Image (cartoon, rainbow over all chains, first blue to last red; front, top):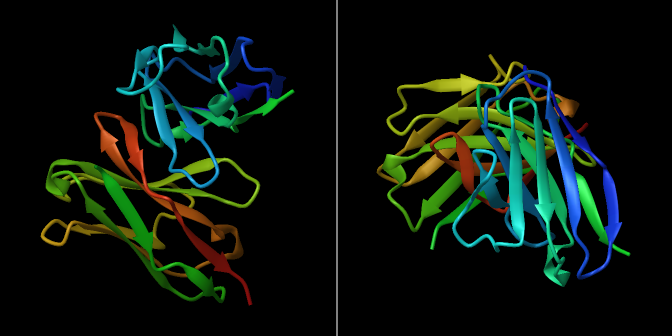
Length: 107
Length: 117
């Protein structure tokens, strides 16, 4: 199975700041990497797929980059609604595997 | 609006069985592959099972293979997960999720399964 290593586990930031979350795969997954947002009381939201393609409705302050084994989610100019948990997931092969998550907290 | 609503969770003793359902609305259910994904308390997400739109292709995580069965009824817009020989480590919030190409574009709110004596 492809192991996904996500870092950091926790990240504290303030509105207006920019943050980056890293996700590393144990072997090449080409660009088949998705990012999801988890918020209490809401269903998990697909933000980005295929490494850098924004899902419809994802604000443009979100961006994804990377290929092979190293990927990054960047959120520019944080908004209050961005404080949540973020997961990466490889969708190159079964079993689909997820990173352990990054909790983005308000500083 | 796409909606996925899971049900059927609860408290069950080890070794017993439970069947989860996921009712879909807002899209043509029969056109999409569907998945079950779970999250144990305090843990990350774990993909559990996949079924193709016409039920021709089915895959399972090794942790549930031989114990869980995924199925669907396209006439009822419903996805199922039959879980047998349940173990404490199966305790988790179970989500159904729609597969678009190879990623999960819509998720349900989840249903809790607790395996305990």
